[in-house]
Length: 128
Image 1 (cartoon, rainbow, N blue to C red):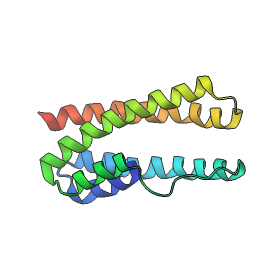
Image 2 (tube, helix red, strand yellow):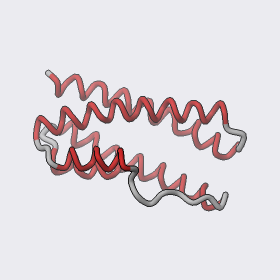
Image 3 (cartoon, rainbow, N blue to C red):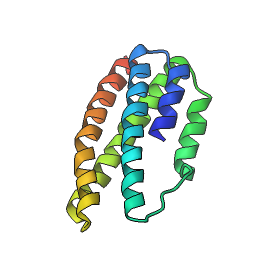
Image 4 (tube, rainbow, N blue to C red):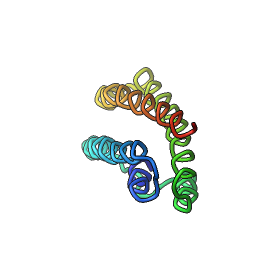
């Protein structure tokens, strides 16, 4: 979802900060997705190829928004989404037995926290 919404931010956002954030989402989450695909392949685990219904709903809703409205709603979603992601990844670092998956989660948490900090700062700027 973060990659697809980052792409959408390139065309629908008004703020250059929101566009830059969207570009960072595309870059960082594509990298993490590729690492996860490699890890899943080594473990013979299949990954979903489609967005979840909830994520598809967010994409559909934001596709129809432009300018300041897109900026505000996208950044609000990115704050909420990254808080949820951090919780899930931190749980994985504590609860998983597989050391490689645990290491992937631990390596990803600081990046997600940086994304959250950035998203919160941008959200405040576009709300004013």
